[in-house]
Length: 310
Ligand SMILES: [Zn+2]
Image (cartoon, rainbow, N blue to C red; front, side, top):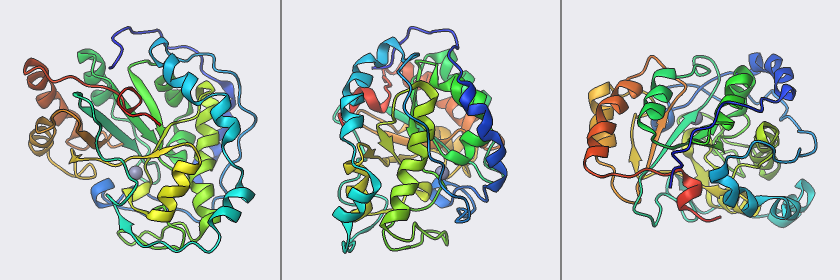
C-alpha cells in the first residue's frame, strides 16, 4: 500500500548535476499509446554509471522493497558479456504491448497508477499540477523515467526519488522499443540487437541507481513495445517488464474529460498508464476530476512495488 507518511525532500545527489549537459542529445518523445510523437536517438552512447552508493534516503515504506533488491540481488545481475552469451541466436516470436512475460496487472485489491516521463524534444517538461494533485490526495504512484528526462531534470528527479509517495522505475535510456532485432513501433526503430537492448535497459538503470542507491525494479520501454526475448532479458537483469490494463491519457493526447473517464474505470488490480512530462496535456485535469470520486467510492492506490513481487 502507499505510505501516507510524508518526508521532507532530502538527499539530492550532486552527481546528477553533471548529467544535464547530455540532455541536448535527446531527440524525441513517445508515440501513440505511449505518447504523441518522436523517435529515439541512436547517436547517444548509453551512460555508464559509477559504483552503487549505499542506500541513504530510501523511504521507510520502501525498506522492504529495497531489501529485496540490494545488495545481493544487484550482485547477481549478470554483466553484458554474460547476457550476450546467454541470448546469442535467440529469435523473438512475439511483438507488442501485452506479450508473454509482460506484467499488465497486479493480484492486489489496489489500483496502481503509473506515469511515464519520456524526455526528448517536447517531452522533458514536468506536470507539476498532476504531482500536486497526487500529493494533495495522498495517492501514491510509480514514475517511469527515461534517461533523457533525467538528464534534463536532475534536481527534480532527485526530489521525486526522495518522496515516499512515489516509486521510480526505468523507462529506458534512449526511449526505444525493446527489441533484439530492431523491430519498430509507430515508426520508431527498436533496439537493433541484444547488445543494444542491454544498453537500453542498463544504461538508465545505472543512472537511476545514482538517485538514491536503489536499482529500479520495474521497466517499461519507450512506446511500451517489446519482443519476447527482450522481455526475458529484462527479467534476467532484475526488472519486471510492466505495461498496463488501462490507457489513462492516450499518450498524453486525451482531453481531460476522456482522461477522467478512463482513469475512473480502474478497479482492483488495474495498472493505469499516463504521463507526467507533458503539462499542457489533459492529464492533470483529468486526474483532478477522477481521483476524488474514486477515493469516495473506496478505491485504494499503491505503487507497483507494493503490489508486485520481483
Ligand atoms: Zn515514453
